[in-house]
Length: 335
Image (cartoon, rainbow, N blue to C red; front, side):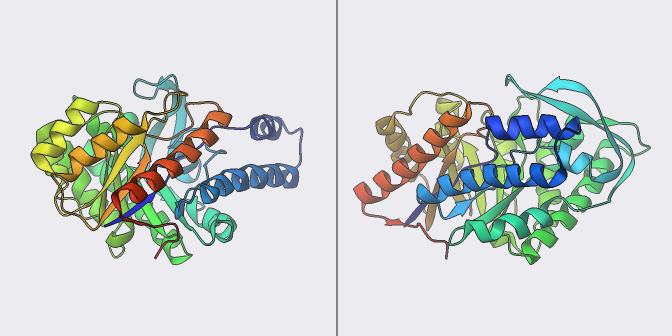
């Protein structure tokens, strides 16, 4: 069995990036100075992941205000409104407001692949998009479309984004649907997500991940998610540990390669490796897979920057420790 690691999503801002974003919005620095500062910061987080031995890296998305905003600001017929808390985190997002069918003005992902893809080598760059069901659920719908119709139109725009990103060299695509771990999520929500994700990743399913985090889905919701046409399925194991382990024991991962959210990205304390390895061994009893992927429980933009670097190191160390102790193949360069 192959074992490898990756960071799930975005990183927190450094002092340089925070001041650069603020000064750029106030017109106090030039566009070129802002771009140079962002390149420095993103290069730092990519370098940290490569140094940790992770074969798949993210650019850090440090210039993203939240997971929705880059797309909202790049699409017609959608704007932003006031702030709302993002699930149960001490973190807020601006509400997307849809007034019509979203239409791409300028791509979000393609320029990032061109800029950061070469920095990732020999690792590959993963691009991340918000799931259409999560985005539609957390948005304000002022259109004539029903919820399902709006989610479909969001998915179409996301498809255009990721298709171009893969064409330009993105090595993996991740679709984040944290809303599906919410206790109010329904089987119908999961079924809609399964259908829409299939459209987003059609043609590169072997490079695709569906990520569900902040909690464990209800059993009936998770069972439906096992139909998703992605090679990889990510679950947050650590946040709701007992429920997650029971879920995997009962349902497994279907035909998917498991991506296990182990390293706690919402807390600054070092993780207990013995407990995490014990959890992985418990999961391995109920799955028969060719690969096992270790990741963070969520994005790391909820903790200070220096701790995000520490968590990156711990993720790489945990992955190596497990592979060596159990005699599995440790993957540090993507196939």
